[in-house]
Amino acid sequence: ILPLSGRGIFPVEFRNAGEVTFRIRYFAWDAKGLQVYAAYTPFARDTIKSKPTREATISFDSMQERNSLLQRDLDLPRLLDLPDAASLRGIVVIDASYGRQSRDASGAIRETSSSARAVVQCSRFGLSLKLGKENGLAWVTDLDSGRPLSRTGLTIRDESGRILWNGKSAGRGMAALPGKPGLPGRPLFLIAPAHHSTRASYSPPAPQAAQPPMAARATG
Image (cartoon, rainbow, N blue to C red; front, side):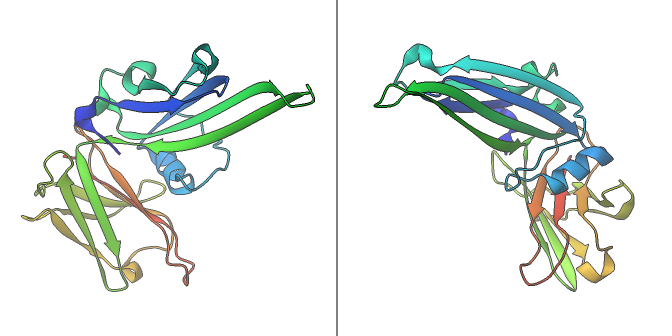
């Protein structure tokens, strides 16, 4: 999670990796974006087939400064042609890949390649989510100050965008949610109408139960 005060700057570093390419895909919080978020977390490496809202690619040659740790900043709003970090009301999937050639002790050319993925959000919110059999709880805070945020509108939707529940965070930034039996057995999202910031959190299913994942998003 990138705090909104960080202006959407995503720092990266690499060394002796040849040409490093970053593919940056932005998915807004529509039904397609919700489905991408449920299926493709930082723990997944499957190919994303959905078309993003916006996309950009940028490359760096790490061999220009051999044996040096290079640090670069990915300015996500600028690369995605958006006015500011607050416009990133969704998720940004960043895939880094590199390929380089080197010679082994026998002089033969060896090719090396690798990749990594990050799922990024820009937000002013910290959001914790618990979902039990009888009820659930969401806790909304300010990422910069740590203060609880009250009166933040929250809506539970399914992956098609259908509204299942509405509510608001109370004085301590908490909101009581329905339990699992009162919600359909599919990926669910705790959402609020987009205004100037969004945030989603992912809660994996319990290992002993074949429950779907649940994501949460808040905005004020």
